[in-house]
Length: 434
Ligand code: PLP
Image (cartoon, rainbow, N blue to C red; front, side, top):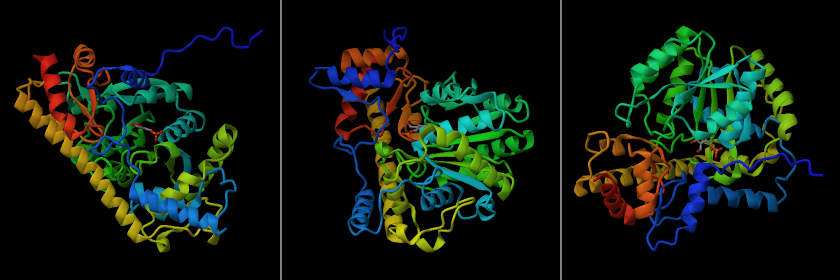
């Protein structure tokens, strides 16, 4: 007898299914623009030089016995938590100055959203979460698996397919009951690459404050979207400044290229230091401890190296039981932080260059833009993806006839684009549109 005899196979994740189909495609020329991972101009994965340096420092500290491989506390590495909270909320944050933020190291961005979802459901009494239409595919799975009902609010303007429906978004959010939980992408909205403007964020912050909505920010691209760590956190900071008490989820998968290390954080901004301590202890004991006890060590060490503007500015986080121990002093310095910021700009610039080249090539080919415009949206959108406006049948033709792979919503990874493929892709797009 098998305990599993009633189990039915579940269809593969559509993106991973495309990856498999791409691998199996025997065509001499094929282009994979389906997956969201940064590639160099040569199409290779990138390990950031600042991360290589951080690895070197961690290795040498291990070799000399200065650090060890003991368990981290349930909430994660104290230095990393402090630096991570500072990175997103900034030096001016009142919540950080007043010790009202409970920060936990998590299993990358997915783990952060998942811990936040469990906390909202079990501790804040949330039943429903409002998610933009469309959103990152995994959001629905994470929230439903935590026990929340998922509802969509207007985001993409379906009339153009390539712009923000801000009026629709504002109207939808204004109609929600007080205390409703709303997911926002802090920057580089996935899959659309379309963000509210600075002014629109201010307006949303006032709306959330006025209507008592709970903001759950998913920040998976800080520094990687615009190349500027502060600009990409402006949304979260505007909410905090407006008196909203946001929950902010962070991922270092893209910004540090630490995809497989699973390093991220979740931050609960609270009304007081006491509340932050209560939230931290409850999340630790009732959510993290039974799920995985404590997070992994290595990614936190690498991130703490790269994120440290200076060791002097690091103080213990709210409720942090672990003060900075001398055994952890393999910390980064201003030079490594500056180097990382330069590398972030380099990644963002490369993606932007691909956007400009592709839009130029599409215009040169005379390909008609699906939104009736001149492909300006490919340049204006931000983050890893271009939301092209191509339909599912266009995407199918691209794959079947030209061996160019996109997700069926017309999302094209600009982070994976190679200069050498631009002309081929533009010609392929024209051929399915014409
Ligand atoms: N949230 C969004 C919007 C994302 O696009 C991603 C990655 O694609 C993630 C979260 C989480 O990724 P990870 O769990 O690898 O940090």
